[in-house]
Amino acid sequence: MAGAKGYNSYRGRGSKWRFLMALILVVVIAVAASVIYLQQFLVYSADGRRQIVLPWQTEEHEPPPEGGTEDPENQPDVDLVVQEPEDQRPKETVAFSLPAQPLRQSAWGEFDTLAFGGGSGAYNAVAIRLKTSNGTIYFDSANAVSGAVEIVNEQGEDPQETAYAIGLFTSREGLHTIASMSCLQDFKAANADVEGRGLKNTGGYIFYDGNNSLWLDPAKPGAREYVCALAKEIAELGFDELLLTDFSYPTVGKINKIAYNTDVPLANNLDLLLSDLNTALEPYDILLSVEIPAEIITQGPDTVAGLDLSRLAGRVDRIYAAAAPEQVETLSGLVAQAAGADGRTEFVPELTENSPLVTGSRLILAE
Image (cartoon, rainbow, N blue to C red; front, side, top):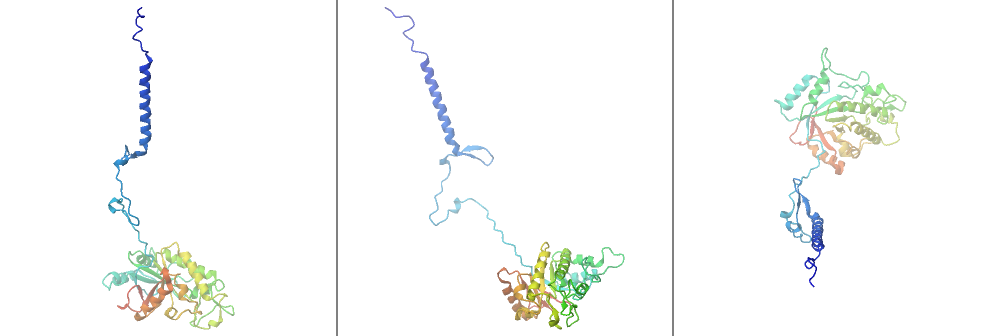
């Protein structure tokens, strides 16, 4: 009996579709696995495009031998910039000292000719006396005691001549300007406030030294405040350096009659004054210097004056002393030795005339 028509060739319609779906699933899984695997080799080019870099597409460098260094050819090209520390020491200056008097505009013309014009051209600095040992002040100070200021202010001039002349010096590019200021010997300020500022004798009155001079007492806050106030005004005028003269206690006259108003060594009170000055001048770009006798450098401390080189060095930028040319090298070496490792303090000789025997910074005193 023949079979039913059409049934002999039927093999089932679902078998081919199942095979095709399985194949597609295998391909999808393989592609997904490949994407996950290749993500570790995905990098970005310099222009931001993504690309795949396979391990065999990168160069492998041989590790350097133990204790050795990598081949420079295989190292990245890097520019190494080494910044040298700034030299904090003051620049070398050859200064000419002007006479102690109020400045006029003509003083600038004379110095300009001497330093930059037809003169020797040997000077790149100038020292200007702004306060004398009797307390006279040669600039328009708002903190000066009554009667202390002496300036040139011709009728009808604007600005007044002394202020204008100071500006000519301080604004000259390349010129180092030094303001010289008597620190503690001050007849006018001491006499104006004996209790608050003046150095007194054991009888309770103002002390007169062997030259009939009066002194400020650095142990008194009022005296230190007065000196610091003047120092700040000088810094604001634009000077590059403040040179303190008469920075000591008096050493002539009946010093046994001085009421020192302190139980500590006198050098401690001078240290305190220097500390106050450094704080007051900190906001300004100005050097702080002191003038002392050369004997303090060569022979050691003077307990009567309160001066000790080892205590001054490191607290000031420069130490000045009158010296003969042949003494300069010795004095400079002793100051450098006292300054120690930081080397902040430099010695500057004060000479009566320029000398070929002296190199480095120096100050030529006014006649």
